[in-house]
Image 1 (cartoon, helix red, strand yellow):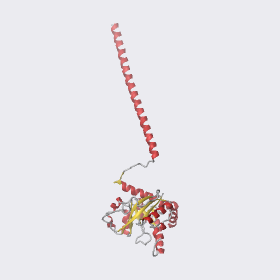
Image 2 (cartoon, one colour):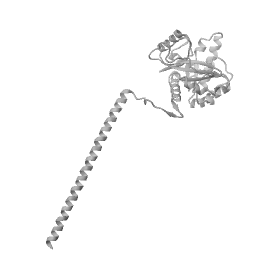
Image 3 (cartoon, rainbow, N blue to C red):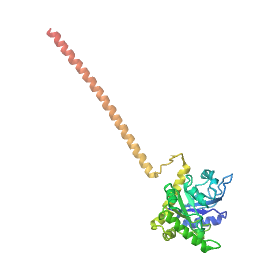
Image 4 (cartoon, one colour):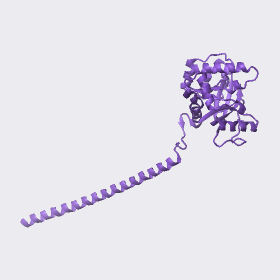
Length: 302
């Protein structure tokens, strides 16, 4: 399954529908529609992405709702956990070194998304990034901003390649990297195989690592976000158990057979116990008769 976890939500329904249809044609299975907030969170938190969507989507495409928070002051994040109840996925986009360090250390958010088309006032430190990856944090590379940049497009592409290369090097060859489009139109979207080739060019250690950036790592990110929303203080509510219907029916039949065999064994035990009790009564009666015979014999002799 291929993932694109950053498709900006636009008010033009026809454009949004064409973009999702094109993503489905390219082979993507899961797409996250992103709503961007900047600075301090508003008092009334609402998600503008309706569920279900007001237009038809491909049946094979799963659509998630995501919020990307752009911020520079870490003190503005005290209401960050309230976002988790309104969106399927929450990403942070820090613009300062202090905000970036805090984003790597937060326990509530698993995705850090940087604008790699600009030069950042900080460096990607190996220890900080690898410690964050061990805790489950993933770092996102968005490519459409460099492809469709307006103004100084050459500088945006140069910064994208340079920052992506540094980020991949700092994570140890691309561990914990997720590649998304952030494309507002279908023109900026690329196929998963193209992203794998780009990842290798940017410095990822092999095509398998590049494929993980659009498949395995993104899937783990979605699973962790789902677990974060559906758990309470480490307790997880298992609704179905993840067993296929055929396997569930087979397991049900096996359980019924086990119960039936257990019932038969219990009946056999009861029967043997009853027979043992009958045998003990017969033996006691026989012993009494023999004792009576011996008594009679002694009386007769006397």
